[in-house]
Image 1 (spheres, one colour):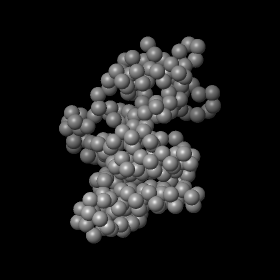
Image 2 (cartoon, helix red, strand yellow):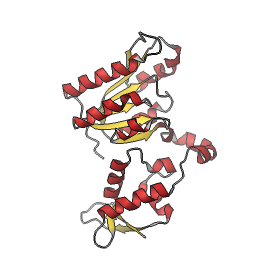
Image 3 (cartoon, one colour):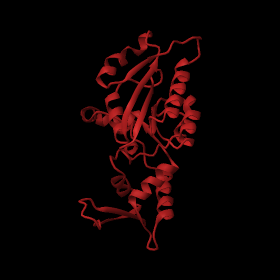
Image 4 (cartoon, rainbow, N blue to C red):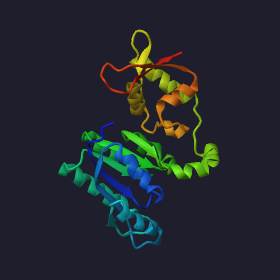
Length: 243
């Protein structure tokens, strides 16, 4: 995870909920420095009122875009044009596209073709083509305030946490096989990176685990070995192996 990149954060105000914007910005900060933060929408519409009080708090610049034609989303076009302007200005190392709209699939692909990191954030209803066009895709539903988690834990355990299936097990297993040494062990950091490349929306938090290590351990399908680092780092190196 490279957190010294300059990121352009472009938010589709028409297709993303205003709640948890603080958590969204905290998540984005893990990947880089959000030097450009813009949100697009028709601010004359009552539906965007919830965003207004959050913009100053998070230093997000609103961009007014009128809907010129009924049924057409002018916000998409404005966001895409700005993204290309930023790309050619070379003021950003990566982009964070916050939307659940598949119309940004081609934009994400084009930005990656230019060598830029592309992070997507959207709801679980986001179409798969947009998800796989990003380097990483994070679901809004997992970005929750810790205080809310305690209050809503029971409800979320039933509705918001995905079940680990054979699909996830096989994804982890095949990634370990691709990276393992002669004894079958693979460095977990490399395994996680490979999984992310294969499936951009893979996130241990989707399954109720803050980190990948406890998720893998919970499956009971893999051996885990914690090794001392050769450097003076206080962190141990985690290796995994298929059982």
